Image (cartoon, rainbow, N blue to C red):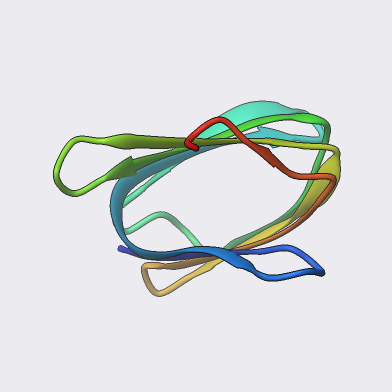
Amino acid sequence: MQVVVLSPEKELYSGEASAVKVPGSGGQFEILNNHAPIVSALSAGEVKIKTEDGNAMVYTINSGFVEVLNNNVSLLVTGVKSTNE
């Protein structure tokens, strides 16, 4: 599935992924290929993106939103700290 992570400052990630784990406002959940369409608010926590090659990208966020539609995952996040660099 195609994943894009955007902050107000810049695009943080864009690429293919096999799984995305997010801190939903009602609890953490994971998005896999062919996930049902959803829009959800995100709470403070970690966003974990498992790339197609098995690597993991991790971002700590303060808040945001996620939208899933037709294997496209869009994350709009604020207060981002990357643990990838």
